[in-house]
Image 1 (cartoon, rainbow, N blue to C red):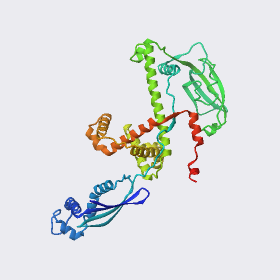
Image 2 (cartoon, rainbow, N blue to C red):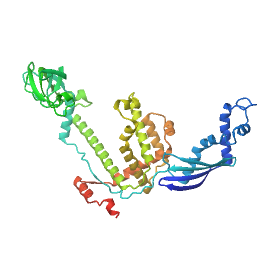
Image 3 (cartoon, rainbow, N blue to C red):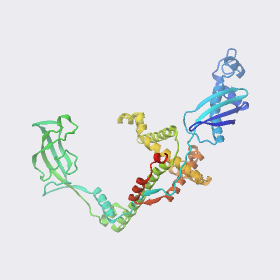
Image 4 (cartoon, helix red, strand yellow):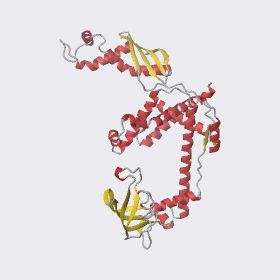
Length: 446
């Protein structure tokens, strides 16, 4: 194989002229013949025994050429792309066979490539730092959540219902004295103050005692879903069976020993603080990355081929389908349940795909500008890390991920760390002021 020429014919489109020598092409033709001859019948020969020359005489000299070119195509194009120094994107490929014969073949292939990227100002990106401090009040709030989850419902005696209680009621709704559909239930547990019923309903149960039967008056909202009830004044007959409240445990050493590995309240709270601090740090770091990613997209200039966005949407949809399968649900069934079409499902992932593609392109360019390049040892370590993560032999990981792809991911990770380390935290007010004083790009171009 020889690359004759590489010519840019359009934005992100290159034409490669590739020559395949006669010996290589004829070997591929012969391999196709051996594979297909068993299916070919020629008068005077047993099926599968006709010589290649006879078959070519019967069906034409080029009878095996198309399949031979299909066999050679992946390797010769890959070699030509590498020789031309191009990074190709999965997209439509325009192929023209200029000649094919005993002397070889000449192909003209037009491929889509990754865009030329320019980026400046990626060092010193400003971001608003999210507070990661954990206060004593935060610890107490977390303790309260834990105690609330561990609480139990107990029957209230000796007082009327109040907000926060659970009222066990029978209710029957009447419109002009007639019960309406969907307006009745028995032994329904309603948390007062939750706002789960129409306005005024829960408020009129507050103050009543268990065992009481009473009537309340409410008006349905004008935007209520049932046409016959919109804006209607109705009555509800209520039978209040029981009032319950949540009884919370006490945070003491007995609770700590029952619900953790610790023996004292102090140790338990110290562990909560450490976990909260780590969570806050992780949240702050993730928020920093989001802000930096947005700035990188603003700083990057490139004409990104649509195919790159579509390919990333493919990846995200495939990942979603895989997650559904792990839950025993097929993606087509999911779309039927939700009313989504393939087009509308893909559209839900478009913004994320665009962001991911553009940020990665920016980071790849930064890696190139900074001379970042993963070593063989780092690639090998990454293979071992992935094998441990997926709990499969490292050979399977190597078969699934090409070394260049792994190295590319490592380069992007390193570039992101470089940008993050050089980023500058600012106050929210300063960031807003900076954004307001920036000159629009369109104005500077004039």
